[in-house]
Image (cartoon, rainbow, N blue to C red):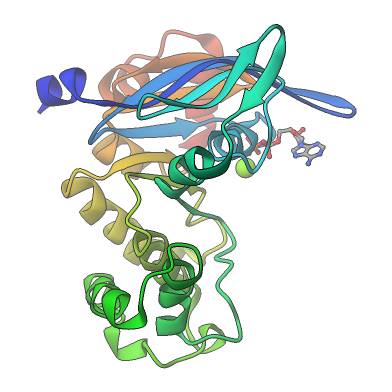
Length: 259
Ligand code: ADP
Ligand code: MG
């Protein structure tokens, strides 16, 4: 398992990314790689740049410096000191290979659960309804919500809505799934069902980058954990290394606070 991953296809290669907002320097040179089937978990205090970093991977934010490669293709690279982004079909291909799940589920409120899953494959990928329908139904079965397919999001619990959001992202058949604190907006009793869905995805060797405060989940599911603070990677390692024997004082202090 470890070996398959360390030799596996490079799914993401992030080199020295920097990001500034008008008044804030948020990412100070972040580099990491993710291989096929790997689950990378990112932890760190609020405001450390985790969401911004994740959003830089699929161009929800543009980077100021550095490069992002997705399965060998450049999403963004530095040319003569400025950032150049992939364009046209290449850009669509790269962005289409990533699915994202947010803290706020962001389902389309005026569409049923099933329509939520059909929308992007039909609009973005121009798939026919009868082509995507069986895929969508299978995904809803997988997340345990087939019986809710004709319900509107507002009728579902937060945990159910988030499972629909995961199924919706999967309907685009992504190669990489990005999760930004997918359980942080949920009541504690609802986080378990979402984590279970994510565990199942990991068990099927989905490549995942997960920002989370769920330390037990991180410890159990991650192949590698990155601890970020103030826009830097302070420390990274296997869950055993990072949780069992953290090296940096910042990491130790953060983990102590989480207990
Ligand atoms: P985290 O996800 O680790 O909590 P964020 O990436 O959300 O951290 O935020 C990192 C820093 O960047 C924070 O100081 C935040 O206020 C700032 N920030 C995030 N998005 C924006 C934005 N669109 N404009 C200005 N500042 C932002
Ligand atoms: Mg965040």
